[in-house]
Length: 316
Length: 316
Image (tube, rainbow over all chains, first blue to last red; front, side, top):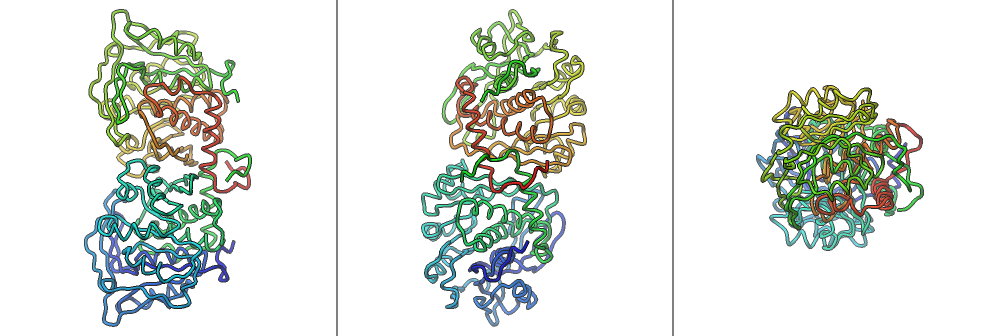
């Protein structure tokens, strides 16, 4: 049951490293570890070595860097800005946990961030552009030399405010993650299927639509996979669900070093496993204690939840 | 590939028989065959013999009765009211096809309807109380003698306007169908999982939550099944989707005469198959030409859509 092999291909991840203040109906945290790169790197680190590219101020607690390093995450690409303040997001969720209400965003050191890849990262085969300004995602794509798989995530903020750059990113990546509302927002199509196909036509051959409590959809070429929802009764904090989903996905794919349809589908399930655990506690707290046994148990649970009949033959 | 066996247990279905006038972004129909009993009976008839209990005015076109009879549906329980007018519903859907907007409802012969079961129906083992006033559902429950399985469906209108009667129905049935919004409305719980458990606590051991384009969930005791969504690009008319879903479900269960967890799950998929076909055309038109081969093909497609890994052993 060892998912993680240190000899596996590493995943290069660029995204935000943040201090989040979050309130939900069940509790709140202040200046807790957050950010798309942190969530996705920790989730990916259960499967593959990770190289993180980001920026922090000197107020970023050393214990967070130690936690990341302890998970085998390479921090050579993390730029600490002396005298700078770390990116901060403050928000809350009401009873509809699907909707994040932003109270405050402080870009801080992100305002002038230009990612610079350490030379050792430029040949990394698996590249994940976590949710961050599309311009910075493009900067990273310019610096990697011959990636085997490029994956991006994004959010409504960039679809509205940086559409042209986002389209350039989509033209160049192999796989795009988006939630269903974002897919509709980007394409203007009400039908998730039509929206996904339109995104495929922009560039990425594979589109993964996250639907929160309704599971996820994978569109790969003409192929379609519907991943089951996990019946969570109590969600403490939905922050980072999408990031840990994508991180689990790319970490698993890199650990298999395989892009077959079945591996992509299993990656979606491992992503769902990581997201379903992540939302059980605030910040990245649940992932701090998560074991490989936990991951295996929930993966198996997903199989039980989805089962209704055996497929007579391998068809994918 | 013969699903339907005339020696299978029949399903008794009570519900509305209607003439619907429906407009959607792709077209419209006027006074077309509709109603919960008609949709669910025709869907069930692909699997089992059906006994329909309902009421029509003498304006109900004979060709509709012929169509139902041709599908092997027993009409002995249909009461024609001389000089009465058939129940009529008029409504439309905008681009969000999940929301039906009612323009006009004419109860007509339904205003004084009290279902009377032919003697031959009173020992029917499989009973489906399609969407209709809970009071009428209770009337039917009073008349059946020793059913093996009772299943009910309902809608927001009755949750709001006939809650006490609906709760009485729920106390007595084995399986309840509801869509996710209705489950929330009935229980006041945002979480679908919590809502389903609360409905189970009222009475039905099994609750099936319909989620439209997001598939369906089955809660059976502590067991949980997440049925995949079907990637429909073009929906002509969502009217009757829930009815044909439930009809396909109960028809399949009766044809198997088995209530095992696996059969219930497969019933949910056959229900999804029937609903996914039904919405491809207006009224019941798609079901008029549907073949057993079509059903088998789409059932197989659902298996492919849901596949990501083999379950090592039978666990359900």
